[in-house]
Length: 214
Length: 167
Image (cartoon, rainbow over all chains, first blue to last red; front, top):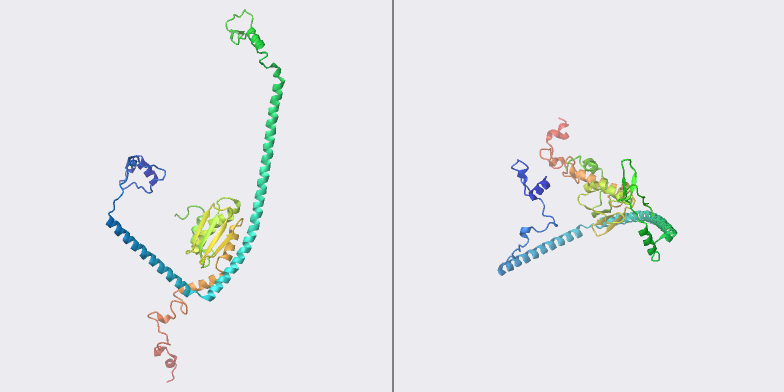
């Protein structure tokens, strides 16, 4: 709800437009996100650097130095107290017991870790094997596709070579041009009401038809 | 949070939280779990975090529990001791029950210790208990009760010496 209200606030609408409840107030409940740029009205505003008088600055520094010193001493005092307290309450018997227990636990844990290490390494080896297999399969598949493509290309080349003698080259271009000029082709046609086709744009139906195909 | 919302709300029931059997040793200060939110070999650690971590935190309110997600190739649990010692527990491809049982063995308090502590706590907690290690040594310490005969003699009408006295 708040988020919606905030969006509305952004749109200069306000909650009053939506809700008749006069007690409802829009709340800005989080700061502006980092990626939102500076407001346009504040774009060229340079905040004034506060001028602190030298006396005041010195006084602040003195107070702050005092504060730091006192805090440091309190902290040191507590550390010292804690250390002495720990040393006093240290029970040798209990400490030995704890150490023995810790050693036992470490031993137990080391055994478990060794076992887990074995299973983990087996798993990793199996994973690697699977990956290698997959990669090999992919290589084979890629080789098959490449071979197919090559075969297709060669087939195309063979076909083109077979019809190469009909190609127009610089030697026989004049001949081809002559032939084209002498065999005029007209693709236009007209049809009558019976659906008969009459080739040629300007020719009457009685005239000789011109073949479309060369 | 409403009671029946979210995944497995049973995790928030008092009964479930109290059923946890992992009470960490007093020396352990931090309990950190590293795991990934994906991967089959992290499943046990993930389930452990989902099911058992609430119980662990409930039973060990003074231990800092941290989870680190998606920072490690294989899951592990690290316990930091008071004296600077660290215990690394590898939990790769282990089920949540296996992890839990192992943790109880390795970093948890033993059953004997727990029982002794429970007895001690009960003695201290229950105002109906009297004697050594309890709040009160004797019922006579409570105002309005008959004082101990060892401290102050009983009234004559309560004493056998006078009740059974031959005329």
